[in-house]
Length: 234
Length: 293
Image (cartoon, rainbow over all chains, first blue to last red):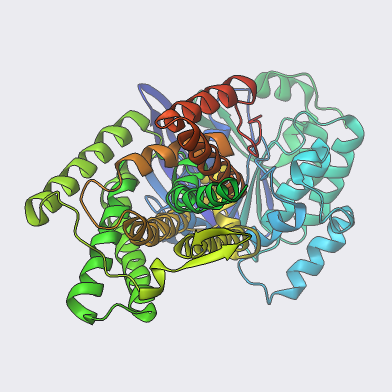
């Protein structure tokens, strides 16, 4: 059973044709990694799914079309989005950031889950989010996606720009989140992908060029060919 | 000394009227960045609806009639502002030149329609009998209506501050000003919040329109002119998006203008422009505004 189904998705921004018929599916209760070199259209794909970019093609959530819907309605349908640059509200406190995202205040279980995953955010509830470290801001961004019961979370490069110690913290948090929800993860950090992803999609020049299991990520030659980076070892 | 006190309190009263105009602008222009030159029309519409209620509906000049005129004037102006936002402004977010052109057009049309209908002469707004009373402080006789203007301005200041700080809609507005797309990505209809801002800004302008008419001894399509300009000056000096900053700036401008005009008639406007230039040069973010990162 697939939560998210994308078929023949095209995105044009101004005169640039960014996505050329992207198609893939995200199975329920799994982590699917969306990989590829910089600039191949991974972030654009997530934004198009969220309705942040105009697109053409089919986007279905649990079999129902969400293509062309307004962004806030797509989010209400059950898609959470953690953007590449976190985009937390820096002038609001941590508590206000989470309160803003919370759609059902009576869902105590969700709030407890967030507290259990990110206890540091509870102690920093009154702190302005703009004064947090990069790792803490990333935790706010992920927590904001987790305070609601969603069908799927789209996460865009959650470890980008973080210090190695913070990468480990965020990776640990994502590892624990992975058991709770379906996730479509854009990430350059291959060790993290290998650790939590069950499915891999590789994009190149606005197209999907590979879909399958994560086994190939252990093959350095495949990784170098498909992703243009050295890697593949455990 | 008595004259000094009289001018000071009268200046605070004038500042209160500037704040009533500027508080809506502070939200619409300061927070949302919409260059809304139709804001003066909200004030004028509020003033005319207040006049209609006082003179055509109630036929009695008492306190309740005046309160009713303020509330109805505020509601009418708020609804008009909502209509302008829904039909016109909502299509022009991020397009500042278009906003300026269209809202100037709306202001001209509203002014022309009202002038064609009622003429440009002042029409007396009925006010309660106690408006002409004075309160004696020391030996200065202060017109009692000044305290009403100050009181309404204070109520609006606290209501605005409480709304932005403690309510859900205030939270959405503050977040939406920072990052509209991300608010939408959290499942929130941010456009609804911005329409609310327009309604509230229009409401404040409408209430201000009735009070400005009482202060100016009448209602006319031309009544908003200088108040709108002062409203923008107050928002810039106070700091974009800071309602308390607008209140502080309005008070400073009202007081300085009154003193300057007393000691040298006609000097008030010059001093205010000089103050504006000084703030823009020395503290461009305004008195209580924040430096944008």
